[in-house]
Length: 282
Image (tube, rainbow, N blue to C red; front, side, top):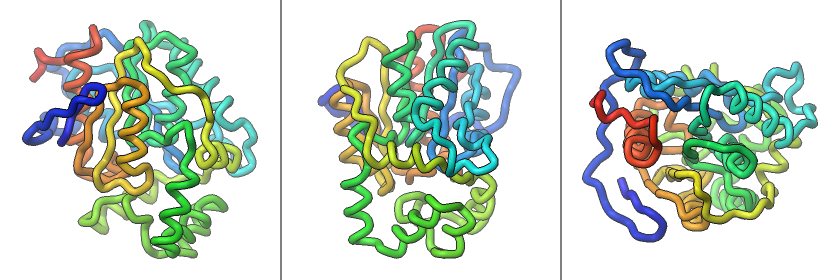
């Protein structure tokens, strides 16, 4: 795992896992709430294991589902990023203190937008989609892996179509040694996605990116080919954020590797976010 502040990297020998999944009543409660925001094609349940890791260390958490997923035909929802902005604004407003937003992929982009509009205790971006968009990255992936790209195109139509078009999973979505049981379990986390949202994901939201007073952590996955490390690292540099690389794939939260990322998040909260650290619990 590589960790850096701004452009000065240091290396850590390993990422220690939190003390097992599941909630515990023994860990002292932290005062700063945490809001988890999943990415495209993903239900909030996909972050249950990450939530359990955080709550095992006394953190108060909430998972926000993307608004289009509540529609009968999410693909036709026209709310776009503005609807996600409103959902996050409601979650932030319902918190009893400025929260830490933890966003994954599209959720990372949404959290970055929220940080420009709301007071936050902290911001954690996990393999975030960049505001500049993913068109160039996706085009490069299409040339190298056309079968995988066919599956992604099918997913834009519906997850059922994607399953029929391509039996192979997109490279970098899961780790190379992912088990059949993990993939079977992950099917329950899939959801059809809004075409308007997917267009913003590809083309970008185009808002300016610069250093922020909000403590920010950006995490890249070395096996991730959906939001590749160079894109994620560049975003961290533009934000002046703490940056970490972990040996996981994009959907780390659905694999047994999720504690590796959670440990990085816990260490960041310990060091940078008052009221969210859990050093006494470890």
